Amino acid sequence: QVQLVESEGGLVQPGGSLRLSCAASGSILRVNAMGWYRQAPGKQRELVAAITSGGNTNYADSVKGRFTISRDSAKNSVYLQMNSLKPEDTAVYYCNADLWDRTRVTRGAYWGQGTQVTVSS
Image: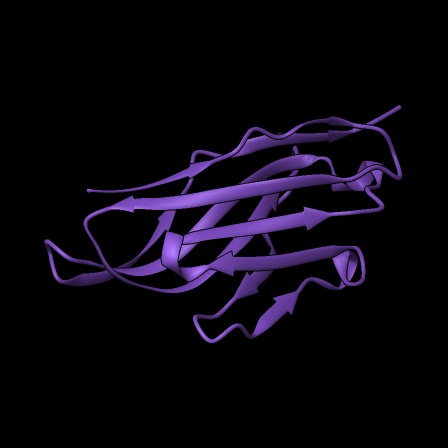
């Protein structure tokens, strides 16, 4: 069984920083792309940032220049460094991994449980 476990989010003042981490564990054969999504109240879940196994990155326009995604493939982990946070960044953040399950020998998308990030003074 595969699990994605995220670090705790938190309450941050506008302009502040926060780093999220996510580790995939369990029956993993190979991890392909990993990413972060977020969902604000009353809105659709949206892609924040993604990183391929080769290190190529992709960001939502709203976070470019402020957020940085990185990964440690040896640890099957992905990180999101969030700087210059704004109130509109408030959302539940979800970790996502496209990976091959070693036991089932199937490829699928797996999600973390979500972590709340609130940006407010």
